[in-house]
Image (cartoon, rainbow, N blue to C red):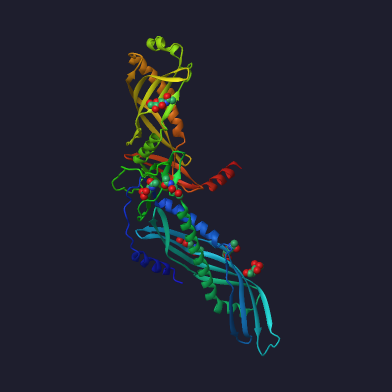
Length: 492
Ligand SMILES: *[C@@H]1O[C@H](CO)[C@@H](O)[C@H](O)[C@H]1NC(C)=O
Ligand SMILES: *[C@@H]1O[C@H](CO)[C@@H](O)[C@H](O)[C@H]1NC(C)=O
Ligand SMILES: *[C@@H]1O[C@H](CO)[C@@H](O)[C@H](O)[C@H]1NC(C)=O
Ligand SMILES: *[C@@H]1O[C@H](CO)[C@@H](O)[C@H](O)[C@H]1NC(C)=O
Ligand SMILES: *[C@@H]1O[C@H](CO)[C@@H](O)[C@H](O)[C@H]1NC(C)=O
Ligand SMILES: *[C@@H]1O[C@H](CO)[C@@H](O)[C@H](O)[C@H]1NC(C)=O
């Protein structure tokens, strides 16, 4: 069969199925799979495809023919099994209307059993025989066109077209007689070819259905902890361009208790770019600063941003006696009582992705409380505005941040213990921020923010790009099993 046949079948389809592609709006996390990523995905798909057709048994073929000098021969081919597939070349192309995957010049080996019976008036007893044969197909072509659409927040994969074409075939008979060989070549070649074509086409259909079911089974939200859920619903249709596929998910944090849709987050049209600072990376995941803002809002609303401190690291338990020279009024009113600092955020942290880092401005109220018997008596409250810079890195499959203190300013909100020495307060606050507040926040941030990735795959050689208001992770993807195998063989 002509090698170009597959292209003549697939190409008109690409023109016909003009779907309208919506822009990716209101998606706050986007993923772009570059041509390098597509190549990797293609190799994986082909690997999985080969695994699914290896040892595939094709249906029995039966035929009979009049053989000169021999008589009427009834031949049955059974146990036709694909034993080996080698792919010479393959390609993946994306266009507005679909993804076209083509495998060309594949070599397929098959094994089979044959048996025949001959009856004729010349040989009244009849003769029969059986044996095995192997078949080698060269220049096989397999092609498929698939499309991705958004259906109610899930990705729907549809198979637009597919085909499998057997090129040349050679048959090697183990034993047997020459007329049988001739009969196989003359009468069975076409049957064997179509059995292979149908068998493989069937597997393609099955494979796509499986992949579609898998996509459908992906959750639309990910539970992060007791407080927050990440909305991972797909937004808009995937945008297929000549060298990349872009998808977007909602990406905002939502509160678990109230099933309220977060309001007031908008963005202009998402610019889809696979650029990774000149580096070839498989995927680029971009996260809008609104994602961090929604997280900040959710945790603030849930009251998760509060901390009670009764001891500063490396120092004795807080006690009014220690403060007797600093705040004499306090000691006079509450001699030798333990104290605690009630640190709470007074508004959600303001988070901004700049061109260099992620900046967070945190407003906290630090209330000094005296513990008298069982009573907690607030005695003064100080408001602190903290500017921090957050450096972001990839740890495992999550984004992890680390805050560093840039500057802070304080003012006294109220006091029941007279005027406080602001210089002393400043130095106390500095110590509280450095030894308690930032380490606490960094501990929380260490848990990270999970990047949506399919189970079994990991990120490799990730880099972070800051591009206001987006932060992007450019990374390669690898199959974890390969990684473990690599580790084993390198340590062996
Ligand atoms: C041949 O196929 C039949 C039925 O499909 C099966 O029962 C039998 O075990 C197979 N024989 C071999 C040698 O694979
Ligand atoms: C498939 O056939 C080719 C050529 O006949 C041979 O080199 C190769 O070893 C075969 N593969 C298997 C698994 O038998
Ligand atoms: C594999 O493909 C190359 C070109 O891509 C071609 O030259 C070669 O003959 C092919 N080999 C087989 C066994 O089909
Ligand atoms: C999360 O998804 C589950 C089903 O996948 C659904 O039952 C639940 O209501 C969703 N939660 C939110 C907050 O959307
Ligand atoms: C999740 O995001 C989708 C798409 O933006 C939206 O339609 C849906 O209402 C969101 N769900 C929740 C629980 O916020
Ligand atoms: C800490 O302060 C907040 C308000 O600033 C208050 O609502 C909360 O009850 C206080 N917690 C304790 C344990 O004192």
